[in-house]
Amino acid sequence: MTVQLFAGIPVTDLDAAIDWYRRLLGQDVSFRPEESEAVWQLDDAAFLYVKAGRDVAGGALVAITADDLDTFLEDAAGEGITPADIERYDEGTRKAVFFDPDGNELGVISLPDTATSRGA
Image 1: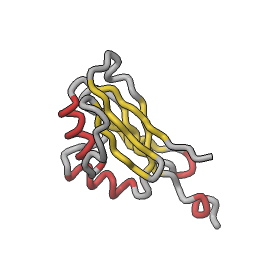
Image 2: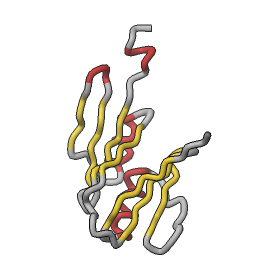
Image 3: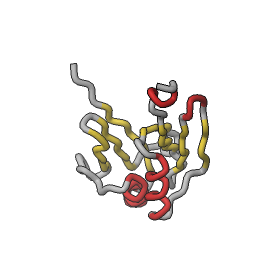
């Protein structure tokens, strides 16, 4: 069985959201299925999309992972985007918390190498 993830984020201003996510993710929109949506393909089976005109804009909670959080943060800072917070958890996991112009939360998580974290 093949599973793909499409995570949607409701926004009020599609153009502002496209600009913000393009800068944060470091890539242009992958495709536009309709006028009110923009989709980024983050991996073979992982997609993030924004959709305008939704009454629930600002309530999304989405998280993605990054192989190298520090490089991700440097690239985002180069685009003028900085996290609201960086949370640290047990075993070396870190999560950078970003809020888009509508207040939707996008977490970028860096998971520790399990072999390294277990002393292997």
